[in-house]
Length: 292
Ligand code: BMA
Image 1 (cartoon, helix red, strand yellow):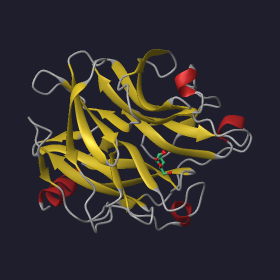
Image 2 (spheres, protein in one colour):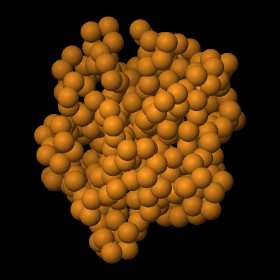
Image 3 (cartoon, protein in one colour):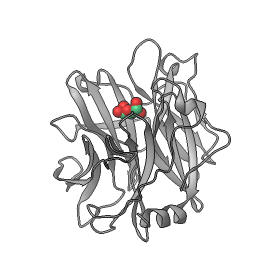
């Protein structure tokens, strides 16, 4: 099965006049309200490599208006090289953002919360220790605890928490698959979508020749450490010129989805330089995932 690319891709590109997003705009967290889709996207200028987060909003999920300034920027010594790859999860009326804080101190999972995307409450590093990234929070508690994906290289892990700040009980759930397109390393995309059949997860996989593709898996609704469907095929691979060439070539990488009507909209970075969207019927994705 393949995702269908939107004909108007890429939907966001760098803006040369804006210092902070003149070189790249890519991996974006997604938040959905009743009438809008919000993207918080990673952006870099030409002056430095530092990643900041920009804001874009749309009523149809395809055409976006953007702010001319970043809404989230490095703020302390754990983030001097940038704030990267945000994943957004709404719990109550608060959006929880897990992101990569990168500095000479390491690559760490940090959290910040917001109600409006402009004012933030920073909660600091939530998984201290060795390098870690690709974290995404599940949208509801399971068995009385919060759950997140995270990535201890090269695999996808879960972590559990009572209060969203202290995380433990790390469990590895998916490993790279030898000889497959995802045999070097894998990492979660955005938060999983709850379906009648379980948690639907879009993830990225990297091959030995460093091509980033997207795949899908289904996790048990009550015990997401149990993988109940994981087809060997991929959903999307770099094919378009702006996926094959850019700041980092041969990359499609997602940090979030929206559900619009009966379809899943997968927002993704192309070659770490532009943002695009590809879609599929939610039911088709679930059926496909169950075949694996
Ligand atoms: C990963 C992350 C992503 C990026 C990908 C491809 O390690 O840094 O932000 O899209 O590499 O360069």
